[in-house]
Structure formats: structure tokens, C-alpha cells
Length: 130
Image 1 (spheres, rainbow, N blue to C red):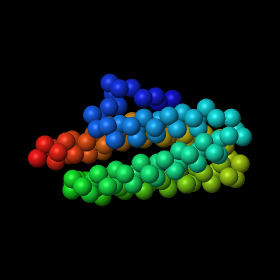
Image 2: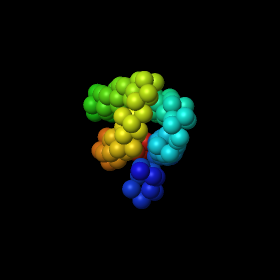
Image 3: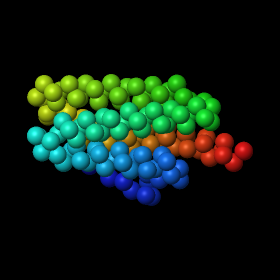
């Protein structure tokens, strides 16, 4: 399971870092939840992720981020996958949703953070520097 690591996850952007820490905490809550609690924990993760992506969208527009289409496209893909996984849970297919939360989301997050979010943070820092 992926857990927050200051050395490899911090972007030196307090708002983004706090959101990412919360994402990983909610992901861990879902992964560790008993079957009876999984749907509620997964819903909390899904709701947070929507707000997380909305917030990044605002940041991207504020700095005229050049890769906004690609970044938001990745966000839409993940939200769609989360919705599909939630349908799996609602249909009693917990194994599929748990696999998504335990394997797919952590792998996606690590890559997305290292690429798209790192580029966004650099663009935001340049814009703030003037």
C-alpha cells in the first residue's frame, strides 16, 4: 500500500500536498476497511477525489497550465474508473473494487504525481515568481 513519504511526494505546494496526503489517507482507509465498511470508505475517497480534481482544475486555469487537456483527461479517466469500481461494490463484487483500490490507484497516483502534478507545481511556482 502506498503511504505518504515527504521525500518522494512533497511538491512544496501546501494546498496540493495537503490534498494528496488526504487522498492517500482515505485510500488507506478504504483498503483496510472491513467488507461491511468498504462502500462508505470508498464513497469518501470518491467524493474527496472529485473535490481534489476540481481544485487542481482551478489551479491549472489560474496559471494557464499548458497541459491542462491531458491532465484533466487523466482526471476524468480516474473518476470514471472510480465510478465503475463503486458499481462493482454496489453489485457485491468487492474483490474487483479492492484490487482497484489496492493496486491500480496507488500505481496511478505515484505516476500522476511524478509527472502531471510535478509539472503543474513547477508551473504554479513560476507563475508565483512572476
